[in-house]
Image (cartoon, rainbow, N blue to C red; front, top):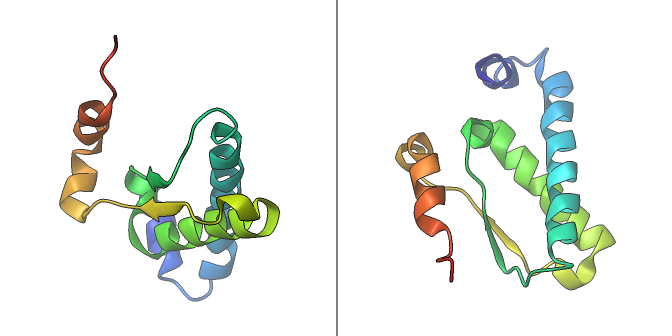
Length: 102
């Protein structure tokens, strides 16, 4: 991932690396749509190093495009990323957000 972040800043490499982030975004969009078959989703918190920098923005942009184009009834879903500090402790945030088991 660090190499991809670096390559996104290099004008001659950016177009190829961008395709990777776009592909991840497409998969994310379809995954969210599939989860919506079972859950009511309005907000999605995206965690992890892959969300860092411009690549993360590209990824979420493409996830939104998938929802708008193929699942217009889900276009209201908002994607969120934590601050850079919170990204570093993302697993803790995810664990704290888990629903209580009954």
